[in-house]
Length: 115
Image (cartoon, rainbow, N blue to C red):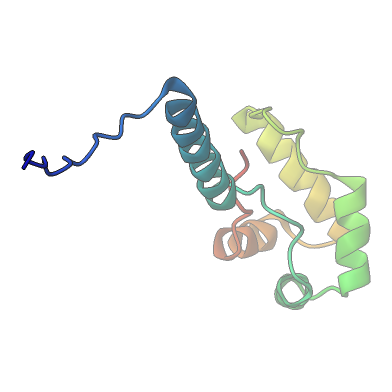
């Protein structure tokens, strides 16, 4: 009687297409996680605008008008100290509040980080 050999487990080797699929899936996952953690900041919430306006003693409409008159610097542009001071002075003038009061409120409610 011929002896039967027990079949051995065939080794499964990954082909190059399988390897590419694994790499593509890993990169997609990493990109999705990274994009969720580094989302650009959105506009401030209504509650934040109300709180800042209340601390400055102005209405939310006045605050929004002043923001439209003195917009923040463009993304990627870092203003010098003199430019920043001039922007604070112009913003305080648009709100009709002292610069010292504006600086105190801005220290309490710093703008979100920009990427």
